[in-house]
Length: 372
Image (cartoon, rainbow, N blue to C red; front, side):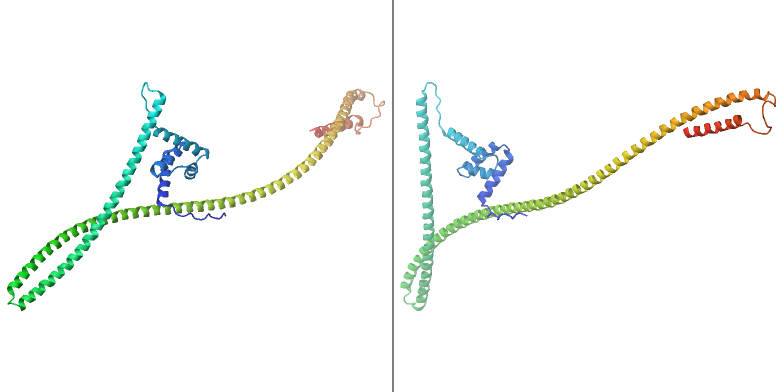
C-alpha cells in the first residue's frame, strides 16, 4: 500500500472561483486548443493575470507543453492585432496609413492614460471629501457636547435666578431683566441645541445607513466565503475518498493477481503430472499394441497353417470318399460272385466299405466344424 501524499492547503476564494470557471470551460470546450485559448482570455480579462505557458499547463493539464505555448503566442498576436489601429482610405500610401494609424493609436493611449489620471484624481478627491465629512461629523459631535454643557450651565443659572427671585423680592425688576436676558440666552441656546440635534439626527441616520450597508456587504462576503470554504472542503473530501477507493482497488487487484498466479502454478504442476501420466499410458499402450500385433501375426500364421492342413485333409477326405464310392459300386458285383471265390463270413462288417465310409464322414464333419 503506497503512502498517502500530504494534504495541500485549502485554496483561496479566488483560486476556487478560478478552478470553477476552468471546470465550466472544460465542459463547454472539449477541444484542447480552444480550451487553452478560453483560459488565456479568462486569466487576462477577468482576473487580471498575465497568462504564461507553465501556468496554463498547470491549470488545464491537457495535451503537451507545446500546445499552451502555441496558443499563448496566437493569443498575444490576436490581442495586438485587435489593439492595432488600421486606417483604410483609398488613395493613401501605405506609409501614410501606418503613420496615421500609429498617431491614432498614440492619441488613444494618451487618452486612456489621461482618463486613468483623472480617475485617480477623482478617487483622491472622493477620499478627501470623505475625510472632510468625517471631520465635520466629529466637529458636530463635539459641538453637541459643548451645547449640552452650555444647556446644563444655563439650567444652573436659571435655577440660581429662581432662587434669587424668591429670596430677593425687592430686586424683582433687576431680576426680571436678568431673567429676560437669561431667557433670551436660553432660547438662543435651545435653538442652537435643536439645530445641533437635527444635524446630529441626520448624521446618525446617515451613519446608521452606512453601517447597515456595510453590515450587509460584510454578511454577503461572509456567506460567499463560507460557501467557498464548504465547496473546497467537499472537493477535498471527494479527493480523499477517490484516493482511498483507488488504494483499496489496487490492494484487491494485487490479492487477485496473487491468487491467479497460485492457481496458474497449481494448474501447471497438475498439467505436468497429467502429461507424465499420459506419456506413461501411451508407452504402455504402445507396448501392448506391439504385443497384440505380434500375437495377431502368430495367430494369423497359425490360422494359415491350419487352413493349409485343412485343405490337405479335405483333399484326402474327398479322395477317400471317391475311393469309398467306387468301392461301394464294386460291392454288388462282388456279392454276385460265388461264395467259394470270396472268403466272406456272415455277420462280419465290411471293413473297407462301411467302416471306412463312417470314418471319412466323421472326419469331414469335424473339419467343417473347425472351419465354422
